[in-house]
Length: 421
Image (cartoon, rainbow, N blue to C red; front, side):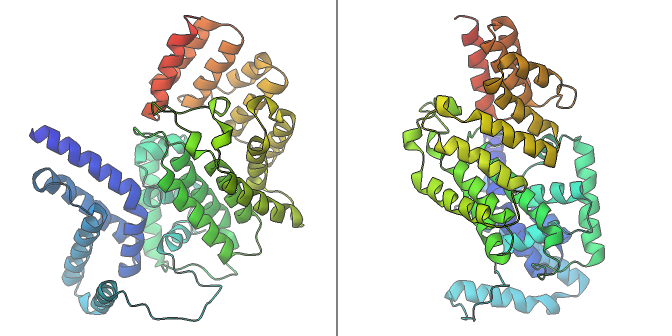
């Protein structure tokens, strides 16, 4: 029974960390003024939860419980450092305002957005950090991913990810980086990283890298919210607008992403009459803004244009794959990556045929070793070519690779089905 309670508590801790980590770390960073210490405090609260929840039970508000424990540890730390007097008024003020619900009205300031999570993203994306360190740190604190999950997303080893996170936190602490959205002049230097993190956060909601859930709409909605805040903060930039359009197009499919049995559905299997027309409409309006600008389409503009092709097609067979292939050609030229080339190969399969696409996919196996989508795409291409035994082997190989449990189950079913047809 004790083992069962411990397992339940561990699952609860993992879930609350995924859902609440960004807000917890952001609030602690605002209070302490130290990003690295805030993340350590949050982690210490998680350890205490793992020790206490199996006996005391999971609290009704687990995120608030973790925040309370982390704040107590911060107070203890300040007492040890003899700095409590400097920060205690902030805690008192926050507590009184939370109890009373009073908010002091302020004049609107377009350059000020009171969003702790967006501030946290900007801090973690500081240009003083190497690109991979910025990404690893924000995926850890904003998306709530484990180091194992981050390693899979970044196609790196776990020790390398851990090292980058530790070094990034140390660098931010030594530079005494303030917890604030940077001024207008310095925002562009962080924009690319901020956009990347917000989209990866959305992707974690749209297609979780691991776990039992096929989709996590709450995570995706938070990413859309952050994207809209970023648009308000940087009104002259088109890429944030394009990113929100991309996320709106993809969000429109949430109601059909999973079947009645909880298994994920492909685009070809989804009932398009149930797609969210209002989300598609919002995305179309944003795309019109991007197209009206004189800056041309960037990385997210091209991605959004691809999503738009799917959104406006009346059915799967009516998809404009020729246009999608041209858009992928532009994307690969703009930002070469093996993952983009894999996505492009899918488009190739519908334009030039599965045999041509399979040659391209096989050429990516060294670059994407251990990447589940590659083996899943191979399985589908082999199935379309009638090579059923090879297709079944590819599906099974994909199912054994790290990734979402629901997707793994679907791949095993496809492996079984393809051999009995």
